[in-house]
Length: 486
Image 1: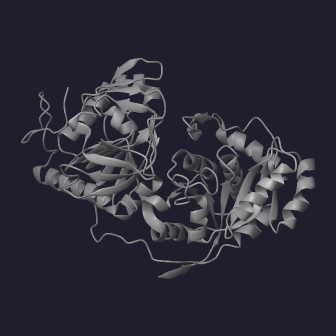
Image 2 (image 1 turned 135 degrees about the vertical axis):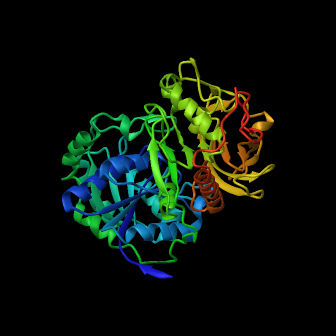
């Protein structure tokens, strides 16, 4: 056990759309620009997109703190590890401050703030309200006796309104941190109940710089640092490291079509000795040389279906690599990429990799959303027969083969208890399905994948080449190909 000190705070909100991510971007940018601080950023929960904004604002990677995925002890350890190298740590919340699984508080921002002993800056959207906004604040303060709320940041009001509200905030025993002025230039648009990605916003850095110039005088930066100083010391265990050292290179898809990837998963592999080789299924014509494993992460392949289809060389390279026995993780968008066909948002149909015979289509609404548990029902995954995983689903697309036996490896159950279904595909070298999996808290999954990659690398080294070729009838050389071919 060790004691870890350091300044930190959480940026939480009254609900989705109140301005948390805008506030987080401006504050992260400002702490670095104004004070030259080394800031480490985090996102509460399973979201991918907000950490992309953190990365664009700071120029460094972000991370996720998710109590459902990793549990309390590991979440504290992850936070403490990166806090050692930081001047200050900032956690952006998700949804409303008290919102957890179902109507409970499990995995909520409040739950995380309590576990990590982190003071909270509550972002309150005051547009369209007068003194009613004070009732909202009072409600958040009294809903839970221990709430960690220490400061208030208003969004979308004028300096005159803030001057009138500030004394009432201070009478509640809170720090009035300031306000974000109403503006139209730095607006984060939504897609599929989430934000568009940071890379899709043209001139992002220029826009955030201009918004920072507006907010530089409306945020009380000194009080913000005072709030961060209220963080209590963390007493936690270090992050365990496997005794196995993995001298392997893992190929990871990363481009505009495939961008939903947990940075902590990359850090996990690097801690095990792995090298990461990024590649683009949209732009590259071949996989990186020397890789022993493949990760096809989520994203928006439907937006780039035509370009992915036109890149026949990459589609064939992926097909052959998996056919040769290279271990692979294909999540959500990566799972769609492995189907025979993919329907774009306008209804056009495009050829994909063809490792599965299915056709992917846009559903009428959100197909599955939220935390899930996954229990392996048949076969094995990365050599393990009994595997239970905690994961997250969020997708508008379905695959025609979901009801087929080929994708019924897992019993998937909503963490809230209001739904279950069969899904996913698994064998000793391969996982494919809609659920996204976080390595910390699912170490058996991660270790199994890296074990298979190590085995692939060793066999390749002994033979002096990549082993196995994919046959025209969908078979791998030397054994039956479990992945259906075209």
